[in-house]
Structure formats: C-alpha cells, structure tokens
Image (tube, rainbow, N blue to C red; front, side, top):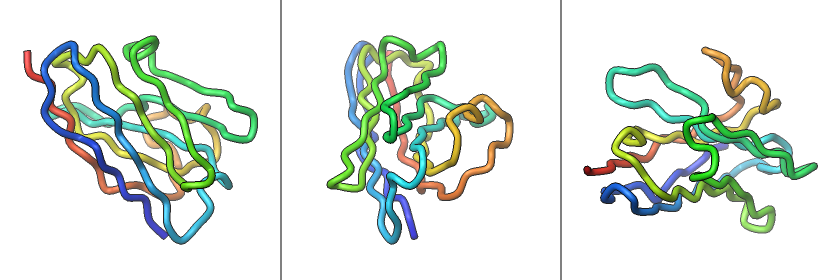
Length: 124
C-alpha cells in the first residue's frame, strides 16, 4: 500500500507545474484524496482535497483560483495542477488518502496513507 508523488521541480514565479500521485496496493477511490504541503520552518498545511464520489472539492484560501485538484479512477491517480505559482508556494508537497475533506484544516488530521513528498521550488 503506497502513494507515489511526482512532478515537483524548479519553476519561475508565474509558472505552472502539475503534480501526480499514483496509488498502488489499494483503490484510491475508496478514500477522499488530498494534497498537503510543508514549507521550510513551517507546519504542514492542507492545500486541496477531492471526493471522487460526488466531485466535491476543497481548497485552502491561499491557493483558491490558482490550483486545481483532479483524479483519474482508471489510473488510480490524483493530480494537482498549480498555476500562477508564487515563491510562497515553495514547499514539499504530500499526497494523501483520507476519509473526510473536512479535516484538511485540522492540525494533525488522521491520514490513512501518506505519499513520500515531492519538492516544489518557485523562484522569484
């Protein structure tokens, strides 16, 4: 059972990146799918979440309108399209399988499966 995140890298401010997170050993659609991030010296924060059963989504206010979360059931994968990137988006991004998008803002939410993290660096 694992989540494999990819797609991070170095990008200039204003640029775009798409993160992917492939699940193996379990059915990702059995859970809601989230993305978290942790910047240097800061605590981890929820970024986006999607419930594939009804298509509902949640976004942190600081990324609303710039990031889009999606998923592909056939590929057992979730994505995070990040546009108009800012230097403050620099962080390690983690994908996750969880039970409820409502816990995305909780300090220590229960997460069933964590991905290993992928580094996004946005230069000014």
